[in-house]
Image 1: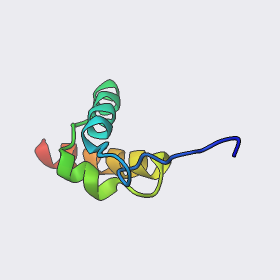
Image 2: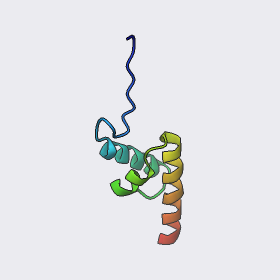
Image 3: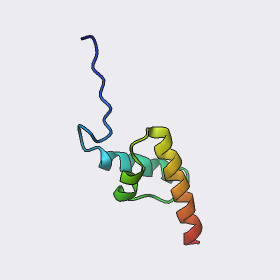
Image 4: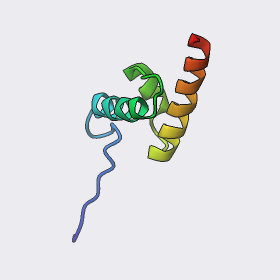
Length: 67
């Protein structure tokens, strides 16, 4: 075997806390509302692009309702 690749999406390790932290840093940079770990858990599972699409859509919607 020359290589071994792992997809650390929570199957082998619990990465939810660090993923939530990273997502929230990105949202902060974009001027959008942060999400909770529970919200991030719902959005995880279909890759980074889908995660960020769902997160930014949800954050924008939340911000609209807050105002």
